[in-house]
Image 1 (cartoon, rainbow, N blue to C red):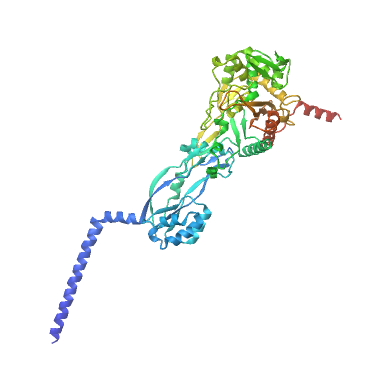
Image 2: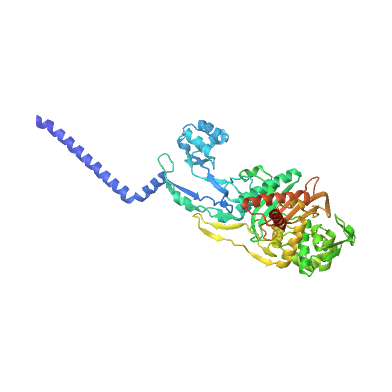
Length: 577
């Protein structure tokens, strides 16, 4: 009996053993197939599920002033992404995100309901928004590291620096001109994800290596600020349309400030009129007016005249063909010294007639008028200086005192700086260095002499004349500074008509250009005010602004007062007492 019972049990065990052995064999075969024949395919599928291909763009390089203060840099601006498959309640999540991101809930709900595993919810949000979204702790919502361009000084030098668009490519100014240098490199990499689809690792070192190069400017943040502040006060006080102020080191051509008013905030450039984006000191040409008399007199000195050479100035009214030239201060006879000091139009026209059209044209061209400076800013104008063979007699006379030609502010300040620099014209300089993302020097820019326009002797003679302008009875007394010998020239130019020949009635450009100290000029400054109301003379509008910028800049740079003759006399007198 027992044998009968035991036999079926043994049969069942045997069957089970056979089945188990079969399963083990099948598993072995399957395992062999998976590990040997299908290993590559399955590995690729696993990588697809647990890794992600990312295109990474390095941060944009910085724009720095001469003292390495940041003018254009980057700040953290995370991008919000989502995995719709993991979001349980798209409508509720959209409502929560809408309050933080200020995006319509309907638009967010549509994104979060897509039949995809990855969507971009919002690009480059603020750090505070990112913090609020993290606090929601919503499954399927992720933050990816990103950055955006930021201008920490807002309006400061905005027209020079420019700005970038949404993809961080330069759209205006130096951001546009040097986009290829500033822009970070782009690579595609594969990163790991966790089970929820979140990125686990991005090589930070690799991201840092992709950062673009940085540019160090000649601009001095402090002098730029002082110039912009003074310019704003001047434009508002005289209810003018706009203004410009440039500060240059005559010996090197370095620009320490290029100021404009009105300005704009490049962090929110879309809120401003496009006309305010323009670096008008480079792109716009205007009739410079009486500042040009400096260059006309310099040409006369080079042609053999002396500071005491005299010209008959027709008692304030001189007819050339059917045109009549007038002087604000009528005079009979004036020396070259006095033509500059009293700003005589007729005296300048008589000089032009004496030295000839070709000579005047040649010297103006050598000073840089009618030519681009090549300083590296987009949209630079040539100005307008016709060939001398196309000049009529009245053209030659008008050009000698700054009408009938046009020039950019950068051309005018460069020409004035050449006088300050013993007659040597320097190339205007805005970029000092280009450095790599590791701080190593890629390119160093050196001051570049262009040509000796006039002799040092002529330059010194013109300096003395320009110093007389700011002394008693001169037209620029409001530019005089205690303790410094200032050299300058006023200008009040009637504006040329835009759509017709002739000039606009009661519309003027008031300007003052000069430098100090006289013997070893440290700074040259040009102030241009467009359409000041009521007072419109350069002596009343632009000269005080020139003085303010120069005085504040000297104080900042610790440029000590000169030991002038009057100061020495005062010291000697004090010792005797």
